[in-house]
Length: 272
Ligand SMILES: [Zn+2]
Figure (cartoon, helix red, strand yellow):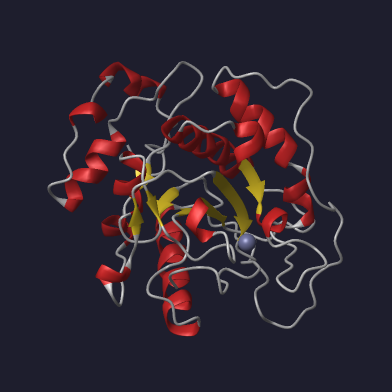
């Protein structure tokens, strides 16, 4: 089996139910095996395979002790697009390179301690751990403070989606992985998908100094559908749906050559 074909949304692994309950975090690379074999939760709510920092060959944070793990769960799951090219390389190796490139950009160009987001999702549908200790924190219902949404980092976990979704939509594999990832986070943290899943622009809003178009007009318009799909997969009520909160059609970002995934840190955030 190739690594690509093993990236299934793992209903069959449900047969191994309870594996996660016995997990230990004693060694970093037992973690990936544990996650890969973890129980998927309720029927219809498969948990995604999460590739660890060791697997994509992350470098350590500049200051590992400066990565804050808060003892509480986040209240919001923030959806981003990375404003990267819409690559047609859907391989696992491309996904790993994406994470390395993003980490380099965040550490060397932005001057942050580490990669900003807690989770990264490639267009091929591969989910990767972002900031140091994020996988461990999610497992324990805790929160690594990231750098992904200005002034809201203390209360949110961010998913960075490879691609630019101003006019295009994510490929099917990425969309399915996004649904599964949101379902996993909502289940682990006990969040309601209908209220907890937001776009970056919902928090760094149009008309404010920190405004962003992220996650792109096209993907932003899909967020009500994302919330509903996640809720259904968790057997939670959808009700009348959960429409978007701010303008869906924002002007295209100026072509400054700077990636517009929006402001990721603000004066109210305790870390970079
Ligand atoms: Zn963003």
